[in-house]
Image 1 (cartoon, rainbow, N blue to C red):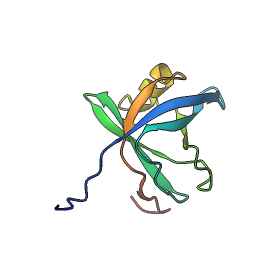
Image 2 (cartoon, rainbow, N blue to C red):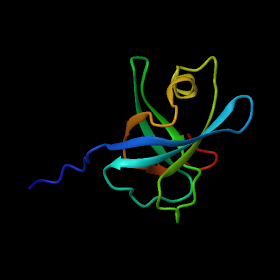
Image 3 (cartoon, rainbow, N blue to C red):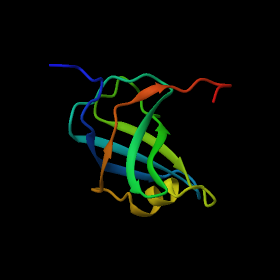
Image 4 (spheres, rainbow, N blue to C red):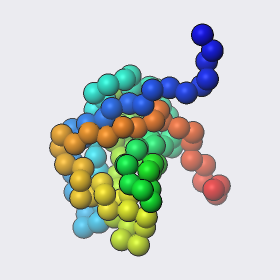
Length: 112
């Protein structure tokens, strides 16, 4: 079988939602379908939001890589953004499900 490098998306469920400040919410996702792939500090999680103007948004994983229970991201509400942060702040309640890609490359300071 030919390996195209593509993998099936993960099905994630919001397991916990914590308001960190007036405009920052942290979300802990558990994997419902798929395998939690190993990740390192600084990698980001591409989440399929299904929004026409922002089909996929990426968020830095803030959980400890040794914690194999899921992923944690913190999202700052960006009122002038393309809708990704607003969508998560409004729609990502505990139990909500999203599709996500595997954790991706590291974000390097001073790049991008």
